Length: 130
Image (cartoon, rainbow, N blue to C red; front, top):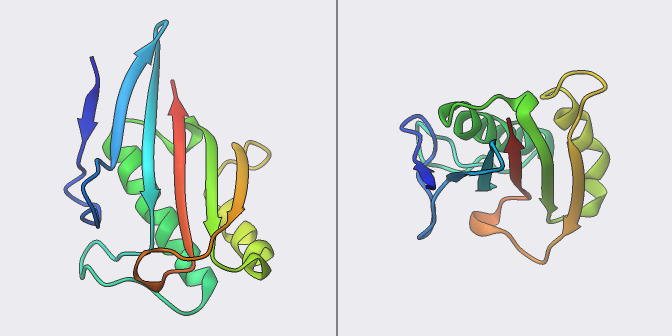
């Protein structure tokens, strides 16, 4: 049976999707987290401008959904970073590394995109397992 999570502390989704869905496979709980952007959960406004601030906002939103679903950031096994500008890659990775235990970052793919909702420069989705 799938469990659908809507974290009351998280930013409201911008479209008709669920922030996270949990399912199990062979006794392993899997959490699939939809793309998390830079929307501030308190104000509903997107964090724009400096990419390090945007990355921090998106990662904080990811953490809210992951922890609100009963998982931890250390349970994340796969991340996809969507960047509007690949020149931001190094700056985003510096912020990203601070959200995971040293030497235990999950696998990660980075994809350059033509556009993201609300003019943000980053979006992050993830899969967690425990």
